[in-house]
Figure 1 (cartoon, one colour):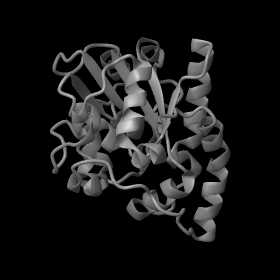
Figure 2: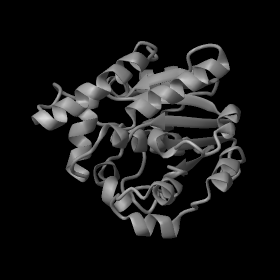
Figure 3: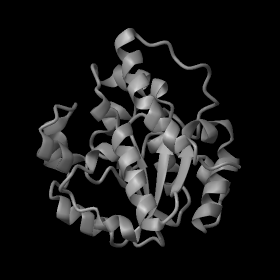
Figure 4: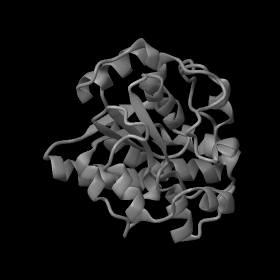
Length: 240
C-alpha cells in the first residue's frame, strides 16, 4: 500500500513520517517533489541550491517512483508530500495508486511556526489553498471525501487517532508508531538541518497545544486568508 500524506509545512508532518517509519513494515519518502518544485518555480527557500543538487528534480521520474515500491521493499510506502510542491504541470496520475490522506493544522499555528524559520510567508507558501484544491480533486475521483486528520487531535490523543487512521486505511496499528529515536531519520531530506530541529530532539508526539498564538497584524491577516480552506477540510476530519 502507498500512503500519500498531503499537508502544508509546519504541520506535524515530519513526526507523522517518523511514526510510520517506526512501524518496521513501512518505507518512507520525505517531500519527493521539493527539489523539482524549487527548480521549476525559482522559489528562494533556505538551502535552495543544496536541495536541488542533492535530490531528484525531474517530476516525471518522481511521480513514477511514487507509484512504485517502497525504498526498501517494505509492504507500506509512506510519502510525506507538501501540497504546494505539486504545481500545475507535474504529473498527478500517481495519486490514483495511493491512499491519499490530508493532514491539517490551524493556520494561526502554521503561520507562527513557519515565520520562525522563514520570514514573510505568503498564502502560496503555506499550502492551504493547494491542499483544498487537491482534496477536491481526490474527492471527485473517489466519489467521496478522502481521509482528513487534524494535527491537534493527534497531539491530544496519539494512540487513539493513529489507531483510527490505521483502521480507516485498513492496516494494523502498532504501539511502535508512538515513539522513535531522537536525532532524525536516515531518509530525511537534506533540508532537515534547517527545518527539523525540534522534531529531531523528540522521541514521540508533543503534548497537546495551548491557546492559539498571538500574531502580528500581517501574519494574522495571512492566517485569516487560510482559515476558510482549513475549515473546509476540518469538517471531514477523522474522529476517534
